[in-house]
Length: 266
Ligand SMILES: Cc1cc2nc3c(=O)[nH]c(=O)nc-3n(C[C@H](O)[C@H](O)[C@H](O)COP(=O)(O)OP(=O)(O)OC[C@H]3O[C@@H](n4cnc5c(N)ncnc54)[C@H](O)[C@@H]3O)c2cc1C
Image 1 (cartoon, rainbow, N blue to C red):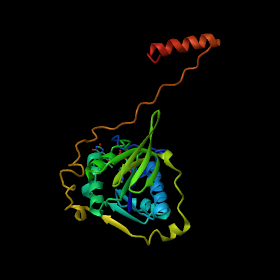
Image 2 (image 1 turned 90 degrees about the vertical axis):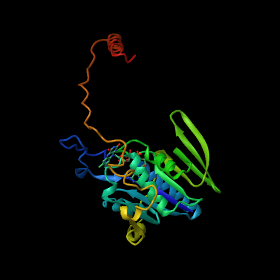
Image 3 (image 1 turned 120 degrees about the horizontal axis):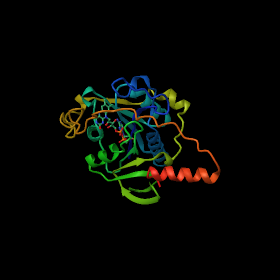
Image 4 (image 1 turned 30 degrees about the horizontal axis):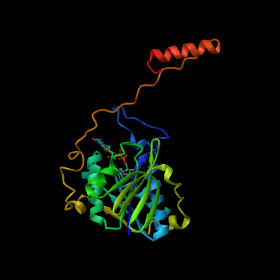
């Protein structure tokens, strides 16, 4: 059994967010981290590896510096890593991104017992579309928002986190599962893992390596293969200064209620 984990390197949006003069994100000046939901996905895979001895492969599509993040996943316990990287893949929207990752996974081989884990969403793009689209393109079932996962034979029981409760779903392999942060507490890298992470197998799949895959076609990848294009991006205007209410409690409550009613909030 092989478990693939799709991991994305993202700008650390909790730190300094820099915007270029043209309104685009200045990614170069921002620190990068592993997308938080993806760390939960790595931990879910490593837990299954501890239980079943499965092989865990971390996969990322991105520029060459994503190698550092993938090595960190190996230091946590993953067996090997695959970086899908090439100029032809740049500028992809979620349709093209999922097409390329599905093409890469297909090339690596998805067997009947295999599982693909993704995060629920990336904190930069924030679409939560890539995981479900990979599943569609590989023609396998998907379960999203996993907050608990148990494996029994060739089926997985997954507790999905909904807005107002949970839903438990049983799914057979091969399947794709998207994980939420609440699923677990990702383990730290081990010292042994750090020492060995440069000795473990690391594969780069470029356009040349993937061009014969049926999913990889110049019309379905990169900027040209993207049905959507970012037309404009901008920083939202700052909210106005807060207003302090004066007077007795009754007067303040009355004024607050009136101003909220005026704005149609209540
Ligand atoms: C130069 C550039 C141009 C772009 N142009 C466009 C554009 O024209 N139109 C547009 O809509 N978007 C564009 N994007 C944004 C791009 O669509 C998203 O970054 C990408 O598709 C992933 O979507 P997301 O971040 O919303 O991921 P989500 O769907 O929120 O991610 C869900 C999960 O999918 C997996 N995943 C997502 N991306 C990757 C990855 N790269 N490698 C491995 N796993 C991954 C992870 O497990 C992640 O947790 C552009 C991005 C760049 C860098």
